[in-house]
Length: 376
Image (cartoon, rainbow, N blue to C red; front, side, top):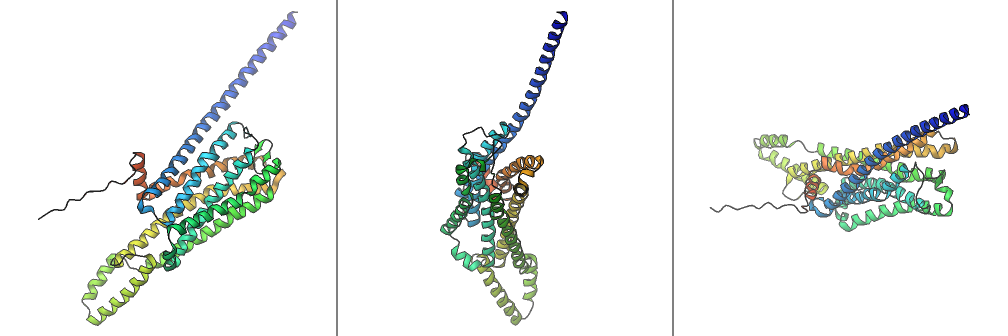
């Protein structure tokens, strides 16, 4: 009996020991998940608020009423919806160890929205690249067609293409749940669609975007090299005044012909002359730099996910567990890109920066400076 009692006592001690250790381990995991969830909630908040500020700025600020900013506003709508509809569900899935805790019918709809918004983002950036290249390449034709209605039609076309490319996902998911579920996780499980969709919706537009951006920079460089610096222009004019009248008239005729071409290219107002041409070229170059940063960050943040996704579609059942862990990480790197653009506009665009500062102070209209005329 004494031995049995001792055995029971030792079992109770061991059970209590393992229970305490297990509870400590469980508390540690929950604490880690809570910190991760808090960090993700901060990302969701800044993504939604930042893109709402972009939408407000383009809607209110008259300086931002142009085709490029209309595209950026539509892109902000897609990024904002990622923060509203996609990120929170992904966070819930993480808290449940990547298992789907919601009704099964919502899984294909969530994947559809996820693919739709990521496709819309790359399509918007591709359309911006094409639109700006056409504007620099053929500005006379572009100026006649660059209206609000035409910009809205282009944006509707971008969204239509994105919806058409993403629509097969809910159709497949409702017909066969195995296409959207893998071991209880809500993921797209159709390798052929993943390969074709990734090529059509990401890699091909990405190549178009990079090529158009390169050609745009090349043409802007050609236009800027056609005009010497303003200081050189003043010295040239000063030296020209000392020359004979015939040479001055010849130089004037050459400059006028050059300015007429440049005004047609960059639509500078009459009377601005060389200074207006140079300012317009600088504005285009500055805008190209900001868009270049947007393109580059989108490329860096989404390319790892699509490459990993393609690798999983190729290897299928023979894939390493490392790939699945990587794709769970890379998808959130892609989500973060939805909240990065407002930060870029704030850092590199004065109009956006001033507008955001006013909106955060609940001042939605720019204060007009009152000028008092002196009477003699």
